[in-house]
Length: 215
Image (tube, rainbow, N blue to C red):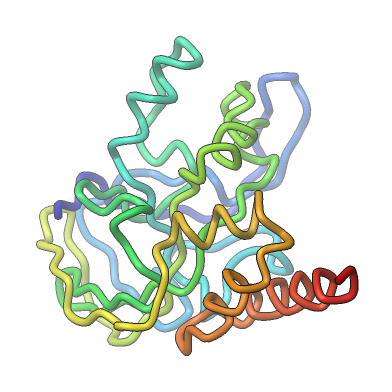
């Protein structure tokens, strides 16, 4: 496991590749160190607080391995923190990380709470239909809550501090959410995760109710 980029940034208005104005917090800049609080990094925020941010989604993580896939697929060279993530990491892909996992990063401890649901701001910033590819593959990255506040440096080490036995990988949860809305057994496995973000608990709960109603 390795931290390859640390990034923060406040919301600002940018011009999309289509020439439209977009107020967003997706444009993060690489920094050498940042202090992480329970609500997220200092000097970092989101624009759309209804769908992003909050204690359950204080830190956004994205696997560095996926960058080469998107660069090849779209014939581009994505910038650092292209997806608005705070932590770009290696050796921590969605298939390897479970919801509920706790990682130590520098002075902090963070807990994975849900897979990320990509939004259109990604495509508007990059000018590529990356969001569709992220949903198709489940390579969305994931979100975390802060268990212990502290400083993270660009060269901070990452290690797995705790793992829940009764959990599912981020990739499995993404697959169920995006592609298997009738998988009641899978949905129940996700809902049984104590560390699950409340937003995802509501969403999966609605999926379960809808699936059961059709039986």
